[in-house]
Structure formats: structure tokens, C-alpha cells
Image 1 (cartoon, one colour):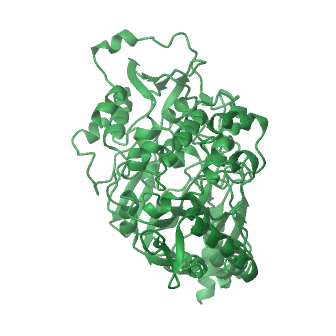
Image 2: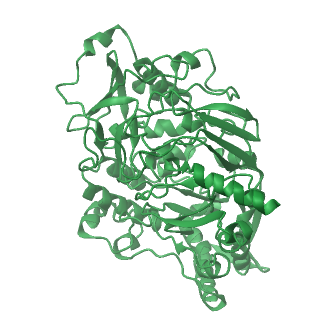
Image 3: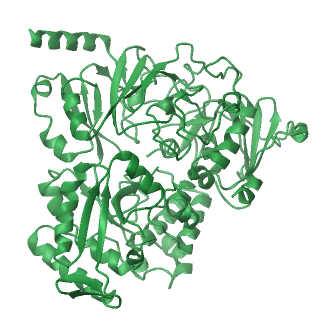
Length: 621
């Protein structure tokens, strides 16, 4: 997952990070210390695209503009302010905003100018500065200003989702140094990606929000500066966004060939089963399929057979991240790693892949699978050097073994796995009494609930629960609506969920929010496990400080090993391609970048659309 997609997910402590625009600003004028402005910055190494580049390689710069695309989403919405944890955010609002910089999909982590025409960064990366474009405008015609950048940062830190406080936690102060230039200084310590993730800052209009309460949900369409604006909506049913015809940034190199649809409509459905039937009926145009069963069995109908609907698997080389059964270690029973490991023996992936997934998946063993960041071999000397200070504080296996999730494959293998699980549970103090697994000291039964938001997962969880039942463990499965699920996640009111963490090819500051100790107690954070481990905190900071790509790889692999052998989750699976189905009205670029399919670079092909309409009309006669 790209960093930008990951993003667009105590007053005393925050005081040091607040940005001010006082009279002392004038003293900072010209304070760029002779650093030369550039068109972009790379995390490690050089930028792929030189100054003066006109477009990314994986887009069609001549793609026609026009047409309507209809998409789907699940659940409901009641809020256009997607930067706070309250409410259910509306689909499509991300298209209404711009950031200072924009990333490319064919590099590990590089950023190029969007709102900013130049970026300044010294060799030690102790600060970064951005010079805004003169032509950047809000949709009401007012210019995007340094004051907007300042206000946005302060507001997101003070009032936005907890994510921002972790992501930008190393910012010390920010100053306005010229009419169109803002300088951001960092706290002591290595944090090489901070200039790039500051570039990801979504800039909001100060003049719009000053008369409104940013902490409240709202159904007033937002004012933005991006390629689209909200055209119409009905709460909980649909959102329509329209391309801004006089969009100031339409010819920027980072936008050329993107944002080709005149109108994008997002229709809301109760669940994926209903949504799939709507797709078959032609109610929307494009679908990214996440169900292996549906992919294997549900697309055998006339529109596919006749070529009216195209079904494709588009390969990618991005990190799969980790999807898993996630334990909430705030629950007393899940604090013991032996118990967590034991329960993992009850999940038979091989049986599930054969009988439920039609053989489409690969088992996930790493938090960074499908990338060079994954710890899938014995540790190298460089990794052992990083891990050496933690000997005795992490499991011994971290240094000597390659982690592999338990392998199943049917009744014989699962019996063997359950015997191993029973031994671990007994060691952890859980014994069998009257056919039930209970705590030997307290007599409490070993029982927990798997909380789901999609009924699609019930067919996966139920066989898992059946296996654990043979160990005397009671597993309840509960599926709730999206609003209730979201609230229970935000308050960590669950035992086990199906969760996960998407990963970029250059992980960094977001890891604090994923597994850092401070995030374990922050409502609405991403540390759903509740990890509070000084070793993991330390390794996360080392990842953030990694000075070279080689150092980053070795440190991420070291962190991966510690996470793997902590048995915090029961890993699931991943696919090395994107599954998409779409009505045959689209054109798309010939090149697919390492990050995978880029739907924003597709376009409506007028000839294909006309031919499709003709075929559909003929079929009705």
C-alpha cells in the first residue's frame, strides 16, 4: 500500500509541535541556508523522474477526458469530515483535496511537487521547506496559502484522528519564511522519511473551517483544491463527485493522465453479496473483487461469456502487508504468547485454500510479505547485529529460526497440530475439565468472540472455531453492521477481529501507530493488538532513522522477526495480483507499476461505451 493511502486513512505534549505565524516570521525570511530547491525528494537514492518530466510512465498522457464511472462501497456515511474519528466518512472525499507533494507508483517511496512547486531539504534532513505554487487555488477561487498549510497541520494534530499525532510526532516547529514558503523543523534524532510524509499533508482551507467546528461531523460538502468536488449526495445512499473543469492542477506532471472521468458516483450497498448482484445487473461499472469464492464461481454469466464484462488479474510487486486474526491483548487471556501461539494451530490454511479459496492464495508469514522487506530466511549478520542488544528480551527463535505459520492440510495434520496446541495450553495453565478448557487457577473457561463486519468471513471462521472446539475452546462468531463495528474497533471493544496493516515499500513513521506503545491506549488508533513492548518501540525508531535502503531493509526484517515470534496474530493469506471486473467501456494504460493497478489512470473509451450500449440494447430486443 502506498504511503498516501495509508495517510488518508494532551495539549501539553503537543505544544512543542504547534505552528505559529507571528511577527517573528519576518526573521525567517530567506532562511533556507542556501539549500537548492528541487522538484521532488526520494526516501533513498535518486528520483526516477528528472526535473521537467511531463508525466509518470504508467499513465496515458493523452487519455481522453469525459464520461461517468459508477463505483460501489459498503455500509453507510454521515460525515464529509473524514479527518476525525467521529461518524462514517463519505466515499470520494479524498479526490477533493491536494497535498504538498504526490507520490509515484513505480518507486519505493518518492514524492514530487503538487501544491508545492519546490521542496528544500538539507543533507541531514533536519528540516524541510515547501514553496507553494502561485496558481494553486481553492474551488472558490481563493489562493492556497502558507497560512492554510499552517492551520491544517495544527488542526489535524490537535483535533484530527490520533493517527496524525503519531505520524507527525517528530515535528518540532514550523515557520512561515516567505510569502509562499513554509519551513518545518524536526526534533533531534534521525527520521529520514519525515520530509516526505510532511509532503503528504492534506492541506485544508483555513478561511472555510474557521467558521465551523472541525471536531464535529458534517454533511456540508467540503471545500477543496483537488481535481473533483462533491456534486450531489444522499446520506447513506450515494455520493457523486464531478471533475473540476478549470482545475488549476490539471497539467501538473503528477496529474497528467490521471483523473479522466467527468463524474464518479459511489453507491452504498448493505453487503458484498447484494453489491455483486447489482454489478451483474449493470448498476455500477467497476469492481475490485476480494472474495476468492466469488472470483471462482460468481462470474459465470452471460455478460462475462459475451465479453461485455472483462475479468482480469493484474499482477503487482507491492508488499502485501498482514491480514490476520488479531488478538486484543488488552484482554487478560491473550497476554500469554503461548496461548496465542496455541490458538494459531487451530487454523488450517491449506484446507481453507483448497476447499474455500479455490487455491488462489499464498499463506502469509511476514508482516511485509511479497517484498524484499520480509524476514523469510535466517537472519543475516547485519540483522543479527541489529538484534543483538535485545537478546534475552525477545524469543530465542528470533535469532535461530525462520518463522512459518503452522501448516495444515486436512484431518491428519490438524490432529497433529491440535496435539501441539493442547501441550502449549497446558503449559500456559489451561486444562480440560468436564470437556471444557479452563484456567487451572481460576476455573474460568477459555472462550472468546470473533467480531466480523462482513458475513463473507463466517465460512472461514466457523471451521477454525470447530477445530478449537476439539481443544475445549469456545469460539463465538458475531457479525455486526459497519457503524457498530467501527465504534467497537475505536474503543477496542473486541476479543478477536479480522484485521491487518497495509504496508508500503518504505515503511516508517506509520509503524508507531501500528505497533507503538503510545498508540495502544489512543482511542481510534491502529494498534488494535495493544502491543506495549520497548523492544518493538526501539526497532520502529531504528526503521524511521535508517539512513540507506540497505539499512532500512535490514531493520525492517529485524522488526518483522520480533513481531512474527511474538505470535500477536494468526496470519492469513495474500494474492500477488489485483482481481478486477469491469463493464467493457474502459481504456487503461499499457504499463502496470510495481504498486499495482492504478484506476485513477483509466478512462472511458467512447467507442467501447457506444458499442457496449448497442450490444445491451440488442440483447433486450
